[in-house]
Length: 501
Image (cartoon, rainbow, N blue to C red; front, side, top):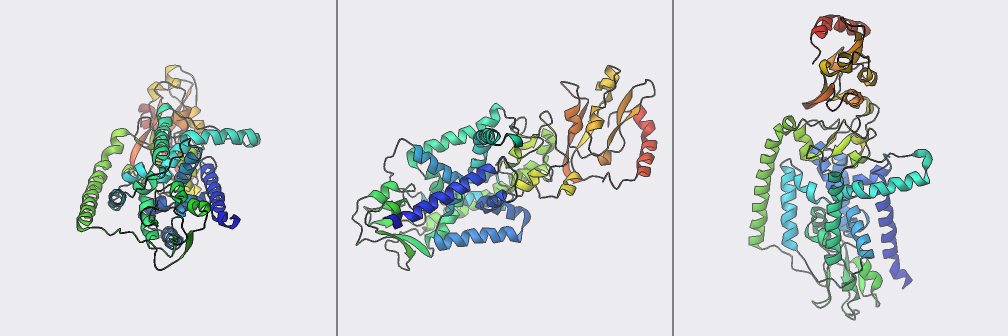
Protein backbone atom coordinates (compact mmCIF):
# COMPACT_ATOMS: atom_id res chain seq x y z
CA UNK A 1 0.00 0.00 0.00
CA UNK A 2 2.86 2.36 0.73
CA UNK A 3 4.16 2.00 -2.81
CA UNK A 4 0.70 2.83 -4.14
CA UNK A 5 0.70 6.16 -2.30
CA UNK A 6 3.96 7.44 -3.77
CA UNK A 7 2.48 9.00 -6.94
CA UNK A 8 0.04 11.06 -4.85
CA UNK A 9 2.74 12.13 -2.42
CA UNK A 10 4.98 13.24 -5.28
CA UNK A 11 2.09 15.17 -6.83
CA UNK A 12 1.48 17.02 -3.56
CA UNK A 13 5.16 17.91 -3.15
CA UNK A 14 5.49 19.24 -6.70
CA UNK A 15 2.20 21.13 -6.50
CA UNK A 16 3.17 22.77 -3.20
CA UNK A 17 6.55 23.83 -4.59
CA UNK A 18 4.95 25.23 -7.75
CA UNK A 19 2.27 27.14 -5.83
CA UNK A 20 4.77 28.74 -3.45
CA UNK A 21 7.16 29.76 -6.23
CA UNK A 22 4.45 31.31 -8.43
CA UNK A 23 2.93 33.15 -5.47
CA UNK A 24 6.36 34.47 -4.50
CA UNK A 25 6.86 35.85 -8.02
CA UNK A 26 4.21 38.46 -7.19
CA UNK A 27 6.37 40.04 -4.48
CA UNK A 28 9.92 39.25 -5.61
CA UNK A 29 11.44 39.89 -9.03
CA UNK A 30 13.85 37.00 -9.60
CA UNK A 31 14.85 35.47 -12.92
CA UNK A 32 15.05 31.94 -11.49
CA UNK A 33 11.65 32.17 -9.83
CA UNK A 34 10.07 33.68 -12.92
CA UNK A 35 11.27 30.77 -15.05
CA UNK A 36 8.28 28.80 -13.75
CA UNK A 37 6.03 31.49 -15.20
CA UNK A 38 7.32 30.51 -18.63
CA UNK A 39 5.75 27.08 -18.04
CA UNK A 40 2.25 28.58 -17.96
CA UNK A 41 0.57 27.43 -21.18
CA UNK A 42 -1.81 30.29 -22.02
CA UNK A 43 0.71 33.09 -21.28
CA UNK A 44 3.25 31.31 -23.48
CA UNK A 45 0.73 30.98 -26.31
CA UNK A 46 -0.08 34.70 -25.99
CA UNK A 47 3.62 35.53 -25.96
CA UNK A 48 4.19 33.49 -29.12
CA UNK A 49 1.49 35.43 -30.97
CA UNK A 50 3.13 38.63 -29.72
CA UNK A 51 6.82 37.92 -30.33
CA UNK A 52 6.85 34.81 -32.57
CA UNK A 53 9.78 33.60 -30.49
CA UNK A 54 11.15 30.16 -31.34
CA UNK A 55 12.03 29.59 -27.69
CA UNK A 56 8.43 30.29 -26.71
CA UNK A 57 7.22 27.86 -29.37
CA UNK A 58 9.66 25.29 -27.99
CA UNK A 59 8.19 25.68 -24.47
CA UNK A 60 4.65 25.25 -25.84
CA UNK A 61 5.61 22.11 -27.75
CA UNK A 62 7.35 20.71 -24.67
CA UNK A 63 4.22 21.21 -22.56
CA UNK A 64 1.94 19.65 -25.17
CA UNK A 65 4.34 16.75 -25.78
CA UNK A 66 4.68 16.09 -22.06
CA UNK A 67 0.88 16.04 -21.80
CA UNK A 68 0.57 13.64 -24.73
CA UNK A 69 3.04 11.25 -23.13
CA UNK A 70 2.08 11.45 -19.46
CA UNK A 71 -1.36 13.11 -19.32
CA UNK A 72 -2.63 16.34 -17.78
CA UNK A 73 -0.16 16.58 -14.91
CA UNK A 74 0.09 20.26 -15.81
CA UNK A 75 -3.34 20.91 -14.29
CA UNK A 76 -2.42 19.38 -10.95
CA UNK A 77 1.22 20.40 -10.44
CA UNK A 78 1.91 23.48 -12.62
CA UNK A 79 -1.31 25.49 -12.93
CA UNK A 80 -1.64 27.73 -9.82
CA UNK A 81 -5.41 28.10 -10.17
CA UNK A 82 -5.77 24.33 -10.37
CA UNK A 83 -3.71 23.90 -7.22
CA UNK A 84 -5.77 26.60 -5.50
CA UNK A 85 -8.91 24.63 -6.33
CA UNK A 86 -7.39 21.55 -4.70
CA UNK A 87 -6.60 23.61 -1.59
CA UNK A 88 -10.17 24.92 -1.43
CA UNK A 89 -11.54 21.41 -1.91
CA UNK A 90 -9.28 20.09 0.85
CA UNK A 91 -10.67 22.58 3.38
CA UNK A 92 -14.23 22.35 2.08
CA UNK A 93 -16.68 20.98 4.69
CA UNK A 94 -18.71 19.40 1.90
CA UNK A 95 -17.13 16.11 0.83
CA UNK A 96 -20.05 14.70 -1.11
CA UNK A 97 -19.54 12.49 -4.13
CA UNK A 98 -19.33 14.31 -7.45
CA UNK A 99 -21.77 13.53 -10.22
CA UNK A 100 -20.33 12.34 -13.51
CA UNK A 101 -20.13 15.16 -16.02
CA UNK A 102 -18.46 15.77 -19.36
CA UNK A 103 -19.29 19.18 -20.84
CA UNK A 104 -17.56 18.34 -24.08
CA UNK A 105 -19.23 20.85 -26.41
CA UNK A 106 -19.19 23.62 -23.82
CA UNK A 107 -15.42 23.49 -23.40
CA UNK A 108 -14.84 23.06 -27.14
CA UNK A 109 -16.94 26.13 -27.94
CA UNK A 110 -15.24 28.26 -25.27
CA UNK A 111 -11.78 27.20 -26.45
CA UNK A 112 -12.70 27.81 -30.10
CA UNK A 113 -13.95 31.33 -29.34
CA UNK A 114 -10.90 32.14 -27.20
CA UNK A 115 -8.29 31.00 -29.70
CA UNK A 116 -10.13 32.53 -32.67
CA UNK A 117 -10.14 35.91 -30.94
CA UNK A 118 -6.44 35.49 -30.22
CA UNK A 119 -5.63 34.71 -33.86
CA UNK A 120 -7.53 37.89 -34.77
CA UNK A 121 -5.19 39.78 -32.45
CA UNK A 122 -7.39 40.21 -29.38
CA UNK A 123 -6.80 38.39 -26.09
CA UNK A 124 -9.94 39.60 -24.34
CA UNK A 125 -11.36 36.08 -23.82
CA UNK A 126 -8.20 34.97 -22.03
CA UNK A 127 -8.44 38.05 -19.84
CA UNK A 128 -11.63 36.53 -18.43
CA UNK A 129 -10.86 32.80 -18.29
CA UNK A 130 -7.07 32.30 -18.43
CA UNK A 131 -6.38 30.35 -15.21
CA UNK A 132 -3.01 32.02 -14.60
CA UNK A 133 -4.44 35.52 -15.00
CA UNK A 134 -7.37 34.74 -12.70
CA UNK A 135 -4.95 33.43 -10.08
CA UNK A 136 -2.76 36.49 -10.60
CA UNK A 137 -5.62 38.84 -9.78
CA UNK A 138 -6.57 36.81 -6.70
CA UNK A 139 -2.97 36.63 -5.56
CA UNK A 140 -2.17 40.30 -6.24
CA UNK A 141 -5.19 41.64 -4.38
CA UNK A 142 -5.48 39.15 -1.48
CA UNK A 143 -2.65 36.67 -0.99
CA UNK A 144 0.05 39.19 -1.88
CA UNK A 145 -0.50 41.20 1.28
CA UNK A 146 -0.34 38.06 3.40
CA UNK A 147 2.94 37.06 1.77
CA UNK A 148 4.40 40.55 2.15
CA UNK A 149 3.42 40.66 5.83
CA UNK A 150 4.99 37.22 6.42
CA UNK A 151 8.16 38.19 4.56
CA UNK A 152 8.58 41.46 6.48
CA UNK A 153 7.99 39.60 9.74
CA UNK A 154 10.64 36.96 8.97
CA UNK A 155 13.14 39.15 7.11
CA UNK A 156 12.71 42.72 8.47
CA UNK A 157 16.10 43.74 7.07
CA UNK A 158 14.73 43.36 3.52
CA UNK A 159 11.44 45.17 3.98
CA UNK A 160 8.97 45.05 1.07
CA UNK A 161 6.50 47.89 0.70
CA UNK A 162 2.82 47.06 0.46
CA UNK A 163 1.23 47.86 -2.86
CA UNK A 164 -1.35 50.62 -2.61
CA UNK A 165 -4.82 49.23 -3.36
CA UNK A 166 -8.34 50.61 -3.49
CA UNK A 167 -11.77 49.01 -3.23
CA UNK A 168 -12.10 48.43 -6.98
CA UNK A 169 -8.66 46.84 -7.12
CA UNK A 170 -9.53 44.51 -4.21
CA UNK A 171 -12.82 43.45 -5.81
CA UNK A 172 -10.87 42.46 -8.91
CA UNK A 173 -9.52 39.46 -6.99
CA UNK A 174 -12.23 38.97 -4.39
CA UNK A 175 -15.08 38.32 -6.81
CA UNK A 176 -13.22 35.63 -8.83
CA UNK A 177 -12.20 33.94 -5.57
CA UNK A 178 -15.80 33.85 -4.33
CA UNK A 179 -17.00 32.41 -7.66
CA UNK A 180 -14.18 29.86 -7.60
CA UNK A 181 -15.04 28.76 -4.06
CA UNK A 182 -18.69 28.27 -5.04
CA UNK A 183 -17.70 26.21 -8.09
CA UNK A 184 -15.23 24.06 -6.17
CA UNK A 185 -17.56 23.41 -3.23
CA UNK A 186 -20.42 22.41 -5.53
CA UNK A 187 -18.70 20.89 -8.57
CA UNK A 188 -15.00 20.63 -7.64
CA UNK A 189 -12.91 20.98 -10.86
CA UNK A 190 -15.79 22.11 -13.07
CA UNK A 191 -13.81 25.17 -14.23
CA UNK A 192 -10.93 23.01 -15.49
CA UNK A 193 -13.05 20.70 -17.64
CA UNK A 194 -15.90 22.95 -18.75
CA UNK A 195 -14.43 26.47 -19.04
CA UNK A 196 -10.63 26.57 -19.07
CA UNK A 197 -9.20 26.74 -22.64
CA UNK A 198 -5.84 25.43 -21.42
CA UNK A 199 -7.57 22.39 -19.95
CA UNK A 200 -9.40 21.77 -23.22
CA UNK A 201 -6.21 21.92 -25.27
CA UNK A 202 -4.34 19.68 -22.85
CA UNK A 203 -7.28 17.29 -22.70
CA UNK A 204 -7.16 16.80 -26.47
CA UNK A 205 -3.47 15.90 -26.14
CA UNK A 206 -3.97 13.45 -23.27
CA UNK A 207 -7.11 11.77 -24.64
CA UNK A 208 -5.10 9.48 -26.91
CA UNK A 209 -1.82 9.86 -25.06
CA UNK A 210 0.97 7.36 -24.56
CA UNK A 211 0.47 6.65 -20.85
CA UNK A 212 -3.07 6.32 -19.55
CA UNK A 213 -4.95 5.63 -16.38
CA UNK A 214 -7.12 2.58 -16.83
CA UNK A 215 -9.37 0.48 -14.63
CA UNK A 216 -8.79 -3.28 -14.56
CA UNK A 217 -12.37 -4.57 -14.71
CA UNK A 218 -11.42 -8.02 -13.53
CA UNK A 219 -9.74 -6.69 -10.39
CA UNK A 220 -12.13 -3.80 -9.64
CA UNK A 221 -14.68 -4.55 -6.91
CA UNK A 222 -16.84 -1.51 -7.79
CA UNK A 223 -16.49 0.03 -4.33
CA UNK A 224 -16.84 3.49 -5.82
CA UNK A 225 -14.00 5.07 -3.82
CA UNK A 226 -12.18 6.23 -6.93
CA UNK A 227 -15.28 7.88 -8.32
CA UNK A 228 -15.92 9.71 -5.04
CA UNK A 229 -12.34 10.98 -4.87
CA UNK A 230 -12.16 12.17 -8.50
CA UNK A 231 -12.45 16.00 -8.64
CA UNK A 232 -13.16 15.99 -12.39
CA UNK A 233 -15.97 13.49 -12.71
CA UNK A 234 -13.76 11.45 -15.01
CA UNK A 235 -14.58 8.04 -13.51
CA UNK A 236 -17.88 6.21 -13.97
CA UNK A 237 -17.98 2.87 -12.18
CA UNK A 238 -21.58 2.09 -13.13
CA UNK A 239 -21.00 2.73 -16.84
CA UNK A 240 -18.66 -0.13 -17.71
CA UNK A 241 -16.06 1.03 -15.13
CA UNK A 242 -14.78 3.73 -17.49
CA UNK A 243 -12.14 6.42 -16.96
CA UNK A 244 -12.01 9.49 -19.23
CA UNK A 245 -8.35 10.38 -19.85
CA UNK A 246 -9.35 13.61 -21.59
CA UNK A 247 -10.80 15.14 -18.43
CA UNK A 248 -8.50 13.34 -15.98
CA UNK A 249 -5.98 15.78 -14.44
CA UNK A 250 -3.70 13.07 -13.02
CA UNK A 251 -4.25 14.05 -9.40
CA UNK A 252 -3.73 10.35 -8.56
CA UNK A 253 -6.50 10.37 -5.94
CA UNK A 254 -8.09 7.31 -7.49
CA UNK A 255 -4.87 5.33 -7.69
CA UNK A 256 -3.91 6.10 -4.10
CA UNK A 257 -7.33 5.25 -2.66
CA UNK A 258 -8.07 2.03 -4.59
CA UNK A 259 -8.04 -0.87 -2.07
CA UNK A 260 -7.32 -3.55 -4.69
CA UNK A 261 -4.93 -1.60 -6.94
CA UNK A 262 -7.27 -1.94 -9.91
CA UNK A 263 -6.27 1.41 -11.40
CA UNK A 264 -3.12 1.25 -13.50
CA UNK A 265 -0.99 4.00 -14.98
CA UNK A 266 0.79 2.50 -17.96
CA UNK A 267 1.04 2.38 -21.74
CA UNK A 268 -1.80 0.35 -23.16
CA UNK A 269 -2.68 0.43 -26.84
CA UNK A 270 -6.16 -0.87 -26.16
CA UNK A 271 -8.05 1.27 -23.71
CA UNK A 272 -10.22 -0.88 -21.49
CA UNK A 273 -13.14 1.52 -21.83
CA UNK A 274 -12.81 3.90 -24.78
CA UNK A 275 -15.31 6.75 -24.72
CA UNK A 276 -17.19 7.93 -27.76
CA UNK A 277 -16.01 11.50 -28.13
CA UNK A 278 -16.20 11.94 -31.90
CA UNK A 279 -17.92 15.15 -32.92
CA UNK A 280 -21.11 14.94 -34.93
CA UNK A 281 -21.53 16.89 -38.15
CA UNK A 282 -23.76 19.40 -36.35
CA UNK A 283 -21.17 19.90 -33.61
CA UNK A 284 -18.43 20.43 -36.17
CA UNK A 285 -20.49 23.06 -38.02
CA UNK A 286 -21.21 24.79 -34.70
CA UNK A 287 -17.51 25.02 -33.88
CA UNK A 288 -16.66 26.34 -37.35
CA UNK A 289 -19.37 28.99 -37.06
CA UNK A 290 -18.13 30.03 -33.60
CA UNK A 291 -14.62 30.29 -34.96
CA UNK A 292 -15.58 32.53 -37.88
CA UNK A 293 -17.82 34.79 -35.79
CA UNK A 294 -15.18 35.13 -33.09
CA UNK A 295 -12.45 35.90 -35.59
CA UNK A 296 -14.57 38.64 -37.17
CA UNK A 297 -15.43 40.05 -33.73
CA UNK A 298 -11.76 40.11 -32.80
CA UNK A 299 -10.87 42.10 -35.91
CA UNK A 300 -13.65 44.59 -35.14
CA UNK A 301 -12.57 45.05 -31.52
CA UNK A 302 -8.98 45.48 -32.62
CA UNK A 303 -9.97 48.26 -35.01
CA UNK A 304 -12.10 50.11 -32.43
CA UNK A 305 -9.33 50.06 -29.82
CA UNK A 306 -7.11 52.35 -31.92
CA UNK A 307 -8.70 55.55 -30.61
CA UNK A 308 -9.24 54.51 -26.99
CA UNK A 309 -5.88 55.75 -25.70
CA UNK A 310 -6.53 59.29 -26.94
CA UNK A 311 -9.92 59.35 -25.26
CA UNK A 312 -8.76 58.03 -21.91
CA UNK A 313 -5.32 59.73 -21.76
CA UNK A 314 -3.82 56.46 -20.52
CA UNK A 315 -0.10 56.26 -19.73
CA UNK A 316 1.06 52.70 -20.39
CA UNK A 317 4.09 50.90 -18.92
CA UNK A 318 7.34 51.17 -20.92
CA UNK A 319 7.39 48.47 -23.56
CA UNK A 320 3.62 48.43 -24.14
CA UNK A 321 4.11 50.11 -27.52
CA UNK A 322 0.62 51.45 -28.14
CA UNK A 323 -2.77 51.21 -26.45
CA UNK A 324 -4.07 48.99 -29.24
CA UNK A 325 -1.19 46.54 -28.94
CA UNK A 326 -1.22 46.48 -25.15
CA UNK A 327 -4.98 46.00 -24.88
CA UNK A 328 -4.90 43.11 -27.36
CA UNK A 329 -2.15 41.26 -25.45
CA UNK A 330 -2.59 42.06 -21.75
CA UNK A 331 -4.66 39.61 -19.66
CA UNK A 332 -4.36 41.73 -16.49
CA UNK A 333 -2.60 39.09 -14.40
CA UNK A 334 -1.21 42.07 -12.38
CA UNK A 335 2.27 40.55 -12.08
CA UNK A 336 3.72 43.83 -13.36
CA UNK A 337 1.63 45.82 -10.86
CA UNK A 338 2.88 43.94 -7.81
CA UNK A 339 6.52 44.03 -9.00
CA UNK A 340 6.56 47.77 -9.74
CA UNK A 341 9.29 49.43 -7.66
CA UNK A 342 7.80 52.88 -8.05
CA UNK A 343 4.33 51.67 -7.04
CA UNK A 344 3.02 53.62 -10.02
CA UNK A 345 1.39 50.80 -11.97
CA UNK A 346 -2.26 50.56 -11.10
CA UNK A 347 -5.52 49.06 -12.27
CA UNK A 348 -9.14 50.10 -12.26
CA UNK A 349 -8.98 53.78 -11.31
CA UNK A 350 -9.99 55.74 -14.41
CA UNK A 351 -8.95 53.15 -16.97
CA UNK A 352 -10.11 49.70 -17.97
CA UNK A 353 -6.65 48.18 -17.74
CA UNK A 354 -3.16 48.40 -16.32
CA UNK A 355 -1.77 51.95 -16.44
CA UNK A 356 0.48 54.40 -14.62
CA UNK A 357 -1.03 56.53 -11.85
CA UNK A 358 1.40 59.31 -10.99
CA UNK A 359 -0.59 60.29 -7.91
CA UNK A 360 0.70 57.06 -6.31
CA UNK A 361 4.29 57.13 -7.55
CA UNK A 362 6.41 57.43 -10.68
CA UNK A 363 8.21 55.12 -13.08
CA UNK A 364 11.60 54.42 -11.49
CA UNK A 365 14.41 55.32 -13.90
CA UNK A 366 16.55 52.34 -12.84
CA UNK A 367 13.80 49.72 -12.86
CA UNK A 368 12.55 47.52 -15.69
CA UNK A 369 10.77 44.88 -13.59
CA UNK A 370 7.51 45.09 -15.53
CA UNK A 371 9.41 44.26 -18.71
CA UNK A 372 11.09 41.29 -17.05
CA UNK A 373 8.03 39.70 -15.47
CA UNK A 374 5.30 40.17 -18.11
CA UNK A 375 4.33 36.59 -19.06
CA UNK A 376 2.37 37.36 -22.23
CA UNK A 377 4.68 39.78 -24.06
CA UNK A 378 2.19 42.65 -23.69
CA UNK A 379 5.12 44.57 -22.19
CA UNK A 380 8.08 44.02 -24.50
CA UNK A 381 11.25 42.81 -22.84
CA UNK A 382 13.85 45.58 -22.74
CA UNK A 383 17.23 46.00 -21.16
CA UNK A 384 17.53 48.69 -18.51
CA UNK A 385 19.33 50.98 -20.96
CA UNK A 386 16.57 50.53 -23.54
CA UNK A 387 13.91 51.19 -20.93
CA UNK A 388 15.62 54.45 -19.88
CA UNK A 389 15.12 55.76 -23.42
CA UNK A 390 11.54 54.56 -23.85
CA UNK A 391 9.20 57.55 -24.03
CA UNK A 392 5.84 56.64 -22.49
CA UNK A 393 4.44 60.18 -22.41
CA UNK A 394 5.28 63.85 -22.69
CA UNK A 395 5.41 66.17 -19.69
CA UNK A 396 3.70 69.54 -19.99
CA UNK A 397 4.36 72.55 -17.76
CA UNK A 398 1.74 75.15 -16.98
CA UNK A 399 3.85 77.89 -15.43
CA UNK A 400 0.81 79.91 -14.31
CA UNK A 401 0.03 77.22 -11.69
CA UNK A 402 3.64 76.83 -10.51
CA UNK A 403 4.41 78.08 -6.97
CA UNK A 404 7.31 80.09 -8.40
CA UNK A 405 4.66 82.30 -10.03
CA UNK A 406 1.68 82.03 -7.66
CA UNK A 407 3.72 82.46 -4.46
CA UNK A 408 6.95 83.94 -5.84
CA UNK A 409 8.75 81.08 -4.05
CA UNK A 410 11.49 78.97 -5.55
CA UNK A 411 10.67 75.25 -5.58
CA UNK A 412 12.59 73.20 -8.14
CA UNK A 413 11.14 69.84 -7.06
CA UNK A 414 10.28 68.86 -10.64
CA UNK A 415 13.76 69.67 -11.98
CA UNK A 416 15.47 67.89 -9.10
CA UNK A 417 13.50 64.70 -9.76
CA UNK A 418 13.88 64.68 -13.57
CA UNK A 419 16.25 61.77 -14.31
CA UNK A 420 17.10 62.79 -17.88
CA UNK A 421 17.81 66.49 -17.31
CA UNK A 422 15.03 67.53 -19.68
CA UNK A 423 13.65 69.89 -17.05
CA UNK A 424 15.87 72.51 -15.46
CA UNK A 425 15.71 75.80 -13.58
CA UNK A 426 16.68 79.30 -14.67
CA UNK A 427 16.40 82.79 -13.27
CA UNK A 428 13.26 84.59 -14.38
CA UNK A 429 13.65 87.98 -16.07
CA UNK A 430 11.10 89.84 -13.91
CA UNK A 431 11.89 88.32 -10.48
CA UNK A 432 14.80 86.94 -8.52
CA UNK A 433 13.20 83.50 -8.33
CA UNK A 434 14.33 80.63 -10.54
CA UNK A 435 11.56 79.01 -12.60
CA UNK A 436 11.41 75.58 -14.31
CA UNK A 437 11.65 75.18 -18.08
CA UNK A 438 12.31 72.41 -20.62
CA UNK A 439 15.81 72.51 -22.01
CA UNK A 440 14.85 69.84 -24.54
CA UNK A 441 11.52 68.04 -24.89
CA UNK A 442 13.24 65.23 -26.79
CA UNK A 443 14.91 64.18 -23.53
CA UNK A 444 11.59 63.72 -21.72
CA UNK A 445 10.49 60.09 -21.33
CA UNK A 446 7.25 60.79 -19.45
CA UNK A 447 8.30 58.90 -16.33
CA UNK A 448 6.14 61.14 -14.12
CA UNK A 449 8.85 61.95 -11.58
CA UNK A 450 8.16 65.67 -12.06
CA UNK A 451 4.39 65.14 -11.88
CA UNK A 452 4.67 63.17 -8.65
CA UNK A 453 7.06 65.69 -7.07
CA UNK A 454 4.98 68.78 -7.87
CA UNK A 455 3.48 70.15 -4.62
CA UNK A 456 0.62 71.96 -6.36
CA UNK A 457 -2.75 70.34 -5.67
CA UNK A 458 -5.35 69.34 -6.66
CA UNK A 459 -4.16 69.92 -10.23
CA UNK A 460 -0.39 69.89 -10.57
CA UNK A 461 1.54 72.52 -12.45
CA UNK A 462 3.30 69.84 -14.46
CA UNK A 463 1.68 66.68 -15.72
CA UNK A 464 2.25 63.93 -18.28
CA UNK A 465 0.17 63.55 -21.42
CA UNK A 466 -0.25 60.22 -23.18
CA UNK A 467 1.19 59.49 -26.61
CA UNK A 468 -0.22 57.23 -29.31
CA UNK A 469 3.00 55.28 -29.80
CA UNK A 470 5.94 54.82 -27.45
CA UNK A 471 9.17 55.92 -29.13
CA UNK A 472 12.85 56.17 -28.32
CA UNK A 473 13.82 59.39 -26.58
CA UNK A 474 17.07 61.31 -26.99
CA UNK A 475 19.97 59.86 -25.02
CA UNK A 476 20.96 62.45 -22.38
CA UNK A 477 24.46 60.94 -22.10
CA UNK A 478 25.20 61.27 -25.81
CA UNK A 479 23.71 64.72 -26.06
CA UNK A 480 26.76 66.98 -25.82
CA UNK A 481 26.96 69.98 -23.54
CA UNK A 482 27.45 72.22 -26.52
CA UNK A 483 24.24 70.98 -28.09
CA UNK A 484 22.39 71.52 -24.84
CA UNK A 485 23.69 75.07 -24.64
CA UNK A 486 22.68 75.72 -28.24
CA UNK A 487 19.18 74.42 -27.61
CA UNK A 488 18.93 76.52 -24.47
CA UNK A 489 20.00 79.66 -26.33
CA UNK A 490 17.63 79.09 -29.22
CA UNK A 491 14.67 78.46 -26.94
CA UNK A 492 15.35 81.12 -24.30
CA UNK A 493 13.19 83.77 -25.97
CA UNK A 494 10.31 81.37 -26.51
CA UNK A 495 10.54 80.03 -22.96
CA UNK A 496 10.45 83.52 -21.47
CA UNK A 497 7.19 84.29 -23.26
CA UNK A 498 5.47 80.92 -23.25
CA UNK A 499 5.87 78.38 -20.48
CA UNK A 500 3.30 75.81 -21.48
CA UNK A 501 4.67 73.14 -23.84
